[in-house]
Amino acid sequence: MAYWLFKTEPATWSWQDQLAVSVPEQWDGVRNYSARMHMRNMRLGDLGFFYHSVKEKRIMGIVRVAVEIHHDTTTDDPRWECVDVEAVAELKTPVTLEQLKADERFRDMVLVNNNRLSVQPVTAREWKLICELGGIDP
Image 1 (tube, rainbow, N blue to C red):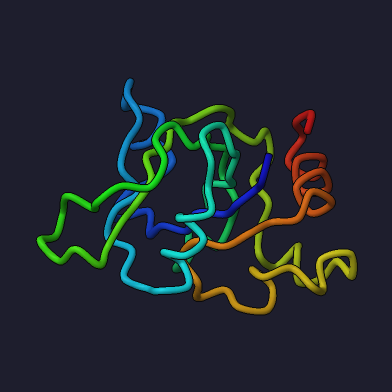
Image 2 (cartoon, rainbow, N blue to C red):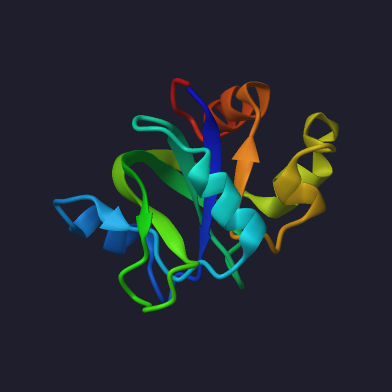
């Protein structure tokens, strides 16, 4: 299993929006080749952090990849693909980017060093530590 982080602007698609849907939802609108490549590497059942960007800058919950890579139906351009995700768990305590930047254990984390990439990998060690910070069992 691999771990990921999915970034979204909460005004566009929030954690509450994700929780409100009862079926897997497309992670659409990604228009970055590196982020697309990460989605191409995702497998059914992989887990990801759901991250609110812009002003909040915090990890809200966990999603699971429910449908592997396919065409992003929000565009006619065949270059763009996406996966579908479903909510799994809410962090008891959201984990902020500020916390991660202040913690030496995350100095190599992609989010800390490139917080603009919309879909990014998370190491197993980072996954475990963030789950613990968020008050849930990894």
